[in-house]
Image (tube, rainbow, N blue to C red; front, side, top):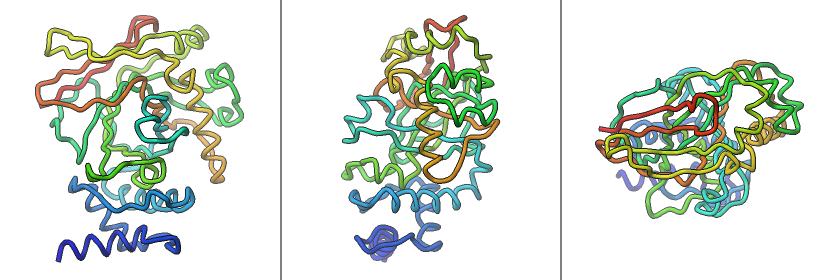
Length: 283
């Protein structure tokens, strides 16, 4: 019976070229799989961007019931190495919810999702709606109220036998699951250059502070604030705008990594004043 139900769900959601937006009932079932951390299979990798965005919108409508209010957006696949892994050359957009965002030093199960991974990221907070007209990183910076160190904890969600692409990742809300926020940093003009030239370093404090990976700030679309411009443009294509208070996750500075029990991860932003950082522990 479970096989029949899952097959019916897949057909209802993404059953072929004639498929339209899924029904509320089928999306509720998909949201239940998300909450129960059950792997999803059978999503149509050839679905149109419109159908993928439709699926995301309906899934978000279900998740808001358990994950709290929408607080911002994430830009996924903004790193060339990550794009190559998923066979695409463009970012994808997801929605961030209030209950997804946790404080620096949070301790979580290593199995916090269906297929959990972690990544060194950065969040910015929107100061005003003038950001929607920004066309360069220099124009973005004055419209930010904070830079925030961030470890994103995405969930690839799909069955290991499935190969995600931009369409399926869009449909599953870009894999948004959890994230760890560090201390807020007031933007300064000097940040414009250092955001691109900094080195973002991931270390495991529990393993003698061993370095696991590092990447330059420029690994995100040549400058992290270019991800803000991409998000604003992507929202504009759907008749929406960034607004004051929105939190924006800009993407990964390096390839995604799997969490393991006992890890104590610390991400440092070497080159930013004071070398800020953020951490998470896995049990």
